[in-house]
Amino acid sequence: MSEGGDRRARKKAATRALVLQTAQRLFEERGFDAVTIADIAGTADVAVQTVFNHFSTKEELFFADRDAWVAASAAAVRGRAAAEAPEEALRRSLLATLEDYLGRLGEPSHRSMVATVAATPALQVHERELTEKSRRLLQEALVEAWAEVVERRKPDALRRAAALVAATWTTSVRTVADEYREPMPPPEEAPALAQEAVALLDRVLRGLESTLRTCETLHGRD
Image (cartoon, rainbow, N blue to C red; front, side):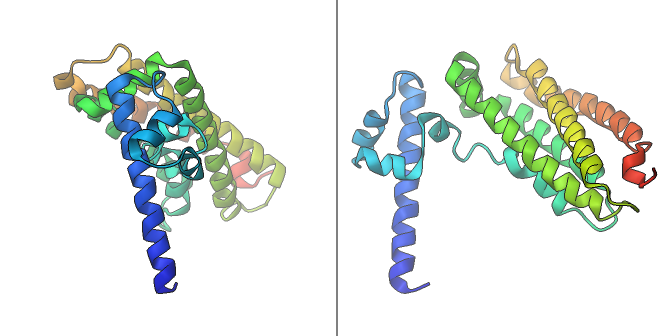
């Protein structure tokens, strides 16, 4: 990339960061519903179109840089060690995501974010959309991973198995997270509750893994 291109990229990244920081500060100060895109643009001293150049919706702005979990499971499956089974990599990733999410309920900024989502229907809808995106990405990664190891490749059967696993496991971690964040625990109890939730999810996922190992599709039998 040329020096001019580098400069433009840095300027674009700086503008995005300014818009994001401004938006999230306004959301925290005024509440999500009370803030408009025009408010964000005016406070950041940029044009409204500049905000839309970086973020499609106010909901996207709220979750920006808070959504690494969306691609984490698929990335873990694709990036696993050669000796690690796809479902083991998936379990490891989901447990880490849950522990991080619940453990940080002791932090004021994270508590505020979780409480805002719980009180805002539009954000709940967007969160469900992100969850569905995560499920689709995971399904694709599982199909690829299993196709590398099964003796007989059956694309339709693998796709169905991957869809079932992705949906079941994603729902399991979301259900456990919901149960342990509602009602919001006192900050000092968050680390212990996170460990308790992780232990519960670990037992559930290990049970699903055990069942999965008997699935004929993954062993390539007719």
